[in-house]
Length: 339
Image (tube, rainbow, N blue to C red):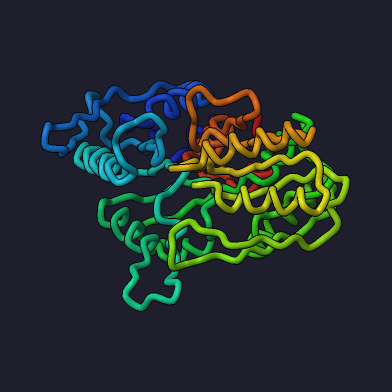
């Protein structure tokens, strides 16, 4: 078969402990199996990864989920665990290692915000991955696509998959496309425009004022555009503590908006996020409006409420991995419905 002639090498999938479910679901779409391996932790907090099958010469894909609700280990623990798995694969003499992390840590820390002695974490992450021998990083919609410039393509390529089109069509299929599309701030206006173009909707702009002296603090949000009597789809790449979402939704309601759908690729939902969102849901019910939260399987929240819906990335990730393995186009896949 032509695909066999074009592929880089036989494919193997290796799962870190936090990503076993993700790797298994992707493997099902690839009609493949996950290579047996184990992630082991010592009492002192050290870890190691052991691969239990011969994988010499393979095109190896190491899966990790940086954010794992319900897991006691930190995002840095899971990042280090991923590096252990990469090292195990390199020692096993694979042909190439691709790290598959739908949410890539550090992508929000892509520049200094007025602090001369502040590190640029996305660059540090790139250097760590390159030093570990990673040939490609496959991630989903990073906060800033310009972070690809932190990677030396002669050593490691960043493959950032955009899911705007399939995610927007999923929202449309679920009846969540709304009358107007907005972003949580002016910086996300291009993202809102991309969703609006797929959905055939007008856009509104939200401008927020942040307090950068305090982490995750939004002071005020202003609405630019007519939303009175209309339902609004708020789109973002990341929702962490949900401070921006709360400010945006309440500002929209003050301007007369009705139903609100909040859709983000990476629903991290840390700290006070769930309490804030539950309060918004309660307010929506009191107002007689609908409030829905939509995310992707980049982060899976157990026991999610019935007002939360999820778009599964696994079919798309499987197609991207197949395309990478056979030297095909990834950009063409981003327009696929992804279901």
